[in-house]
Amino acid sequence: MQAAIKTAQATIQWDRSTTPGMKADIQLLQKREEVGQLLVEYRVKVSGAPHDQSYTLMAWPVTVRSPVTFMDGLAIAQDGTIGCPATSTGSCAQRIKGGELRLTYRAAKGEIFRHALVSADQKSRIFFSIVPYPIQASDKSCSLEVMRLSPHFELVLVRGHGFTPQEDMSFHEQSYQEIHDLTVKADDQSEFQAPLTPSVKGRTSGTANVTVTGKACAPTVSFDWGQ
Image (cartoon, rainbow, N blue to C red; front, side, top):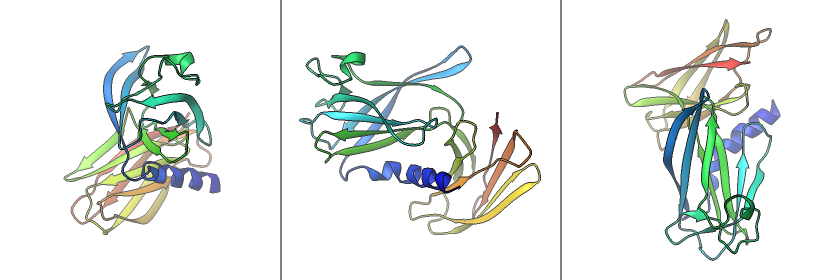
């Protein structure tokens, strides 16, 4: 359980860990079905970061416990795009030498892809995450999203938007006859994030239903967990 809490908290803090003044803009290039899977490709453009540094791209897929190095030797061009210079001696030269970085995913429902660009001098860090195939639901101005943090939804993160700032909401989750009720609080940006372990003892799969009730809305989102 401690490992799950650590993973959830690290994910909540992920995008917030970017060096002040820097930002990653994720641009969708294409989305298509391929052999029954959703294939999605993105471009990343960075603003506010120095262009005279070499960068390492970190990745944290849901299949591993901690971030790993994806490739190094990258550079940020003047227009903000990320690429591998023709002169680079980093590992990016084995993949995209002289070309632009494109992030391509075979995405499952709710799966989150977490990345970070870190400069060679360690002074510039740009964190970003992508959920290509979101699980979402809304009611009035409020919405809920379920993000898969482990391969079979053993751990998920429920993110809410559009609630009244600083309000306390009722969080209700049910799978089979097992129920979890708790109180969550919206922040100053009208958002909240809450980890959840939906599995039920004696079951290998099931459907979880989550409802968050605030002053002006009560969205419900459902998702399947397990094998």
